[in-house]
Amino acid sequence: MDTVNEFFAQVSSLLWGWPMIVLLLGTHLYLTVRLGIPQRKLLTGIRLSVSRDQDGEGEVSQFGALATALAATIGTGNIVGVATAVALGGPGAVLWCWLTGIFGIATKYAEGLLAVKYRIKTDDGRYYGGPMYALERGLGMKRLALFFAVSTALASFGIGCTVQANSIALLSNETFGIPQWIVGLVVSLLAAVVILGGVRIIARVCTILVPFMAAIYVIGCIIILCMNSEFVMPAVRLIINSAFNPSAAGGGFVGSSVMMAARYGIARGLFSNESGMGSAPIVAATAQTRNPVRQALVSSTATFWDTVVICALTGIVLVSSILAYPDISYADGASLTKMAFSKIPYVGAPLLTFGILTFAFSTILGWSYYGESAVDYIEGSHMSRFYRILFIVVLFFGSIIGLDVIWNIADCMNALMAIPNLIALLLLSGVAARETKEYFGKKK
Image (cartoon, rainbow, N blue to C red; front, top):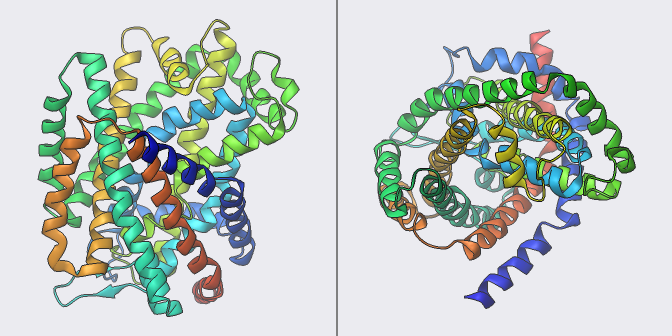
């Protein structure tokens, strides 16, 4: 098993090296220019996300699709991932993470547009879409579409299932002393109630859970910022200055070069918002919308909320806490996050625990649908119920076993999802640009 783990660790390191980071960030920049800077329409996207398209066709509301995508996207990466970037790349990593989110909005926009453009409707009224359908129907690349679907199905059992269940079980055991198998059983039963109901029930639960859990976490961050009020602006200045001049951070921070800050900031930003990975458009295709551009605008707001708001807020909280409490430990991301939230009297640790637990559980719900859609593409919808049951069983076992090798396999599968999705985005960017131009031309 150690040999297998080492093998996948090396493959993961290779797949998620600088070539992948450059490819993802390059796609973000290219689509920003090619699509006429869709970030300008962010407020329109936010407005559309909370309004129902009465003339639209689909299974769930636009907000339901957005909430499900956010459920899968907002996770421990927003908390521990940002802290790890700060610990390894210095405070400047926060700015690079934020910039990745800004430009990633364009990629998420293109993903949502192509998902609706090439989606299909089955005889029983279900809607399917995502990179596999864009590759097959838009480019005629059936084999590459199957490759993406297989990678997605495998990834759903990793990053979206066992890894999240294990995080919940370990945290509950460490915090409350509850045996991991009991936590696993409870999580599996709760997930079963939602997952077995299909995408409509998943979306309905996510529309309630996601705003609630995000609001609680943001309130906790605001409390810490109020406590660190005199250090907030110095923290912002330090983040900006050290992104391009690491020596500005002082000798106490680990980051020693612009490359280190950029590497960890960009990598964590990409992992957090999943722009370019191809997961979110799978649920975007189910949205009730009359036009691909409308859903594209709504989908693009997911990256804004995930990275531009929550990750940035987390970064400022962490850097201001380091300035306010010079003795704080930031040798690793987990320690830094715990120390920052523990400064809130009485409720700090429970608040962090609640955030991680709910973020992880919501990720389980979102990824269960991604995996189910991938399996349906490969084998047909008759496999849906079998996949859901298998997902729930694996969820339980993920709570009680070690997951080092699962983490590395999941990272590999995520990278293998991104490659065909980026091919579809780049080759179909002209389609996305034409749809965008026509839509806003008619609006004018």
